[in-house]
Amino acid sequence: MIPEVAEAFAGKINEAIEVTLAEPGFYGVKCNPHFAKGMVMVIAVGDAEAAPESFLEGRLPKKAKDKFDAELSGL
Image (cartoon, rainbow, N blue to C red; front, side, top):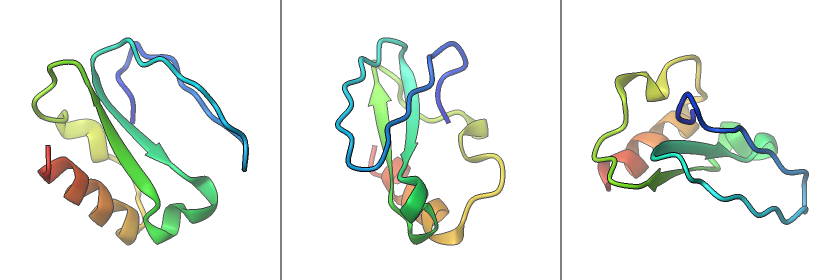
């Protein structure tokens, strides 16, 4: 759930990470241990106005999908 040309990033539990998101677009971020409970967020970088249709493709837990939908509708 990141722009095609963007570099993926990940952190470990309780590890602080710093990421520079230079590629415009939408980034879906999830907490792996709490993904099924809906601990996700969307970061919009640049002038992107709407997430691509493929942004939520694939199998997602219901709570995570609902949270992503809510985040995207607020942009």
